[in-house]
Image (cartoon, rainbow, N blue to C red; front, side, top):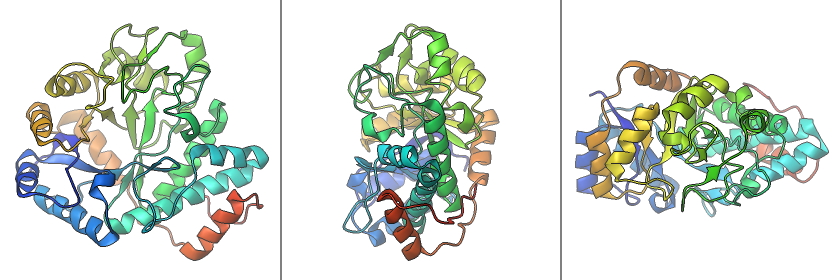
Length: 346
């Protein structure tokens, strides 16, 4: 069965009979996990296997937001804690080589946690560049305040994930760092001029435009579109994300149930896909909303299908790593040690 152009959440750590039936009939392209879905490694392995069995696709992607810091769905006691993005930035400021090695190792170790569970996509890295007046929703999730530094660290994390067999998702295109509000709660409006945006916010994403997957920002940039946020703006998707930044990969919306967006869930799905998003992301596991999403999401065909296939084709077998030694090196780097010869594979 051809998948529909959406990623769904589910309500808990196991699939209900209603969810199995929904997944079988609606055929979402992927599943995204949250803390409510996570208890133990064995339980997560069962859940991801049940999802793939329900959709009839052993290759169906399973996603999570595993950044480190305050955005970490897999946490102790079963999984290690990872640093916030700003910690990589501080290490980079002391020693750029150590900062990049630490970022690569962070990505590689996260991948080694996720892949055995059946989770093969991480919504990481961020390329958001914080600016004065920006809401703290990004805050220390960001790697720094210079686009070149942000891009370098983000690229290293993405390379580490991919070396571990996990696909990265570049977010939040074309930038959330300047947004004066938390898009989980309300719609942020950015009025900065185009030259400033091109030189800062957008500049951090350009070196990462080759990554296989990306996620939009629910942020209005009035210079380009005075009304619609990037997620639902055809102008922003075409002129900024695809053209100015040059991102060619699979583009998914941020969560369509967030407070920044208006209209019904069905209207949000239609608007995001009409604007140029390839995939609609819906996270909260509310069955009534999930059914509305499925009703509006078409089967994946044409260019969105091609980009989805290309993204999944970028998955590769994990490189060899000694987890114990890698974690020792990782800890030493973050404590201020000198870099060692970790493989900075791409």
